[in-house]
Length: 318
Image (cartoon, rainbow, N blue to C red; front, side, top):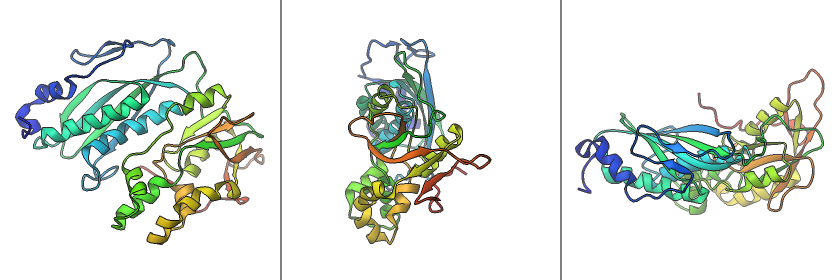
């Protein structure tokens, strides 16, 4: 049976294979198998986010194993819940693929999802399976605030420190190496395939008094610009504080003839967390800049070296 395709096994046969043997915590009141799952909401509020991965745009199966794609799909969604200062409680997954896709690839994809979900402490509680001309993976993630207020992008105030936890520019470096056909620097190439969000640090930031937070999905400058615009402030990044970030990237940058500053400031998909703290920064977080008053009548900006960054702008979907 292991050599069968999705068409040969059928929708419910595949679903049965993908859900068999999974266990669920007490917060899952009803798991897969019915028209919908039932998930407990202790806080009485639900934090929800959704994201999609499309073959050819967000991943390539000649670079990524299905297991890698599954881990990436879960990681990028979980990072959004972390960025609100919340705790991940569950995922639902929709998967589209050609009918002749081997069932084993779908199983590997789901195993990768469960592996990454395990790092968050939350299960996959349901989903859907459809025919598609190419792979599409859509994940919706749920979270709980444990009685706290969400940490939004709109709370940055002048005088706050801007700090980051997690890596910057590593995924962009990995992408450049893959695109250039460089077989070395596996630590960077692998991090493009599977990001490593700093799970648990969103809650740490919230408890430490963070007033604004986001994850670096589109790029450090692009994501901080959202905070600046919604908060009505400027954000000044410190070149001195960021030097250690691009020093790590110098070897792969030299290999492909790139500027590591572009990767640190403009590269996305690392899913590090960046937050604004009016008081002390939690252990493990690195201060990389500050929130400053913006001039009246001017648009909010992200400054680097006293000027608005004009290099790589970050990811755009269109």
